[in-house]
Length: 362
Image (cartoon, rainbow, N blue to C red; front, side):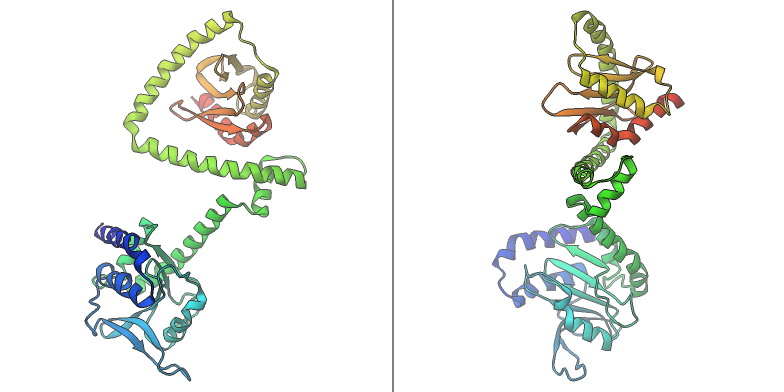
């Protein structure tokens, strides 16, 4: 998409020059005017399209100026207020935007410091600028989902009704993403209690909440890593097929190694047996308990269906300082997840049950 190329080009400029910019005027010249011209497509030197230092008296406020007013069909459509690069943006910086938005025909306003652009409209009350933006763009961290919405603001594709109609969804999606992000970084107590209540049957005491705060952080990180891994596997599906073939060969090799193991005297530890019983209790409603078996090797403790290495439920890696549980995807590719204790196996109840159900259905 051409607009993404232009955004990336402007992003490079911000990275290279932002340290040299010391004033608001320099910010406007170096970054904001190129944004208006190159990204939005308006001629910054044509007063029929862009009016700098736009003046509109509001009540007792006389002679106040807004940095830029953008016109379309001779009507003001967008108001832009600028701050110096690096200066944080908040609603207190938008006082003039609030006043001007009310007395002009503009439906869109932008608050920017040359790097971050916050877009506002009047979703909450007609002709009154919202306090929260419906769209945000950070040129140093470009979200590709923003590009199609920016297109609606460009001179060639300007469609204010389409923008406003989509703004409600964009606003709440943006806020939800922020909430999710904050939970990943620092889960709130209510969120932790919700998670704990879904997987823990006992009374949720303060000690349990503290435990699940740690487990929730770890699980969120691992879940995100799993999603990244899944995307990578999809992107390189050809390699995934090769890996699947290699895994099949590896399983055949494991069969031989397990036979040798039985003769080599590998010792099965009490922890491994306990882990086996935990997994067995988790999947017993899906698979008859008598079908759940285990095989011990020097490198891992495997839990299987029908004593068949082609039907692995999981692998426990317990004979090391950092313990792991290895879970399998549909291609029988193992992904290891660190655990601090055997009790954390319960955190993977859903995945273990899904894996077992796959063999039963097959």
